[in-house]
Amino acid sequence: MSVDGLVRAGLVKSGGGKVRLLDRNELDVNWDPTKDSHLTVWEVTQHLVSLLLGESEASAAELLAKVGGLGDAARDLATVCSR
Image 1 (cartoon, rainbow, N blue to C red):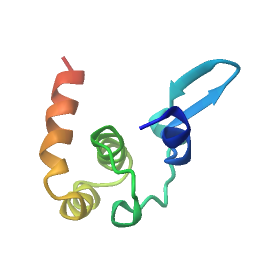
Image 2: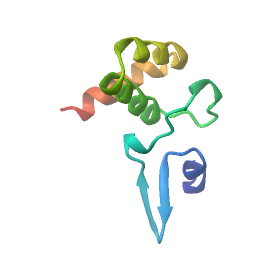
Image 3: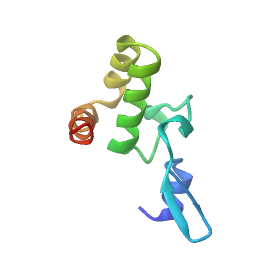
Image 4: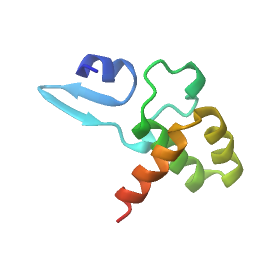
């Protein structure tokens, strides 16, 4: 995916020759993975962590049901990043 594609997907900020991933708190709170045509493991992971920290396990479980197999990859990414 191109940088422009990542910007359109709402995953990065780009400007002045610099690109950075959005912080978890900058992601769209109304994000719906069933309507996201650029679904990524990173994005799923960030939304799951956000739900676990700010809402509840039940909210995270609802999201897991929507993302299917990406949930396993998100868990693996979160595990690696927490080391």
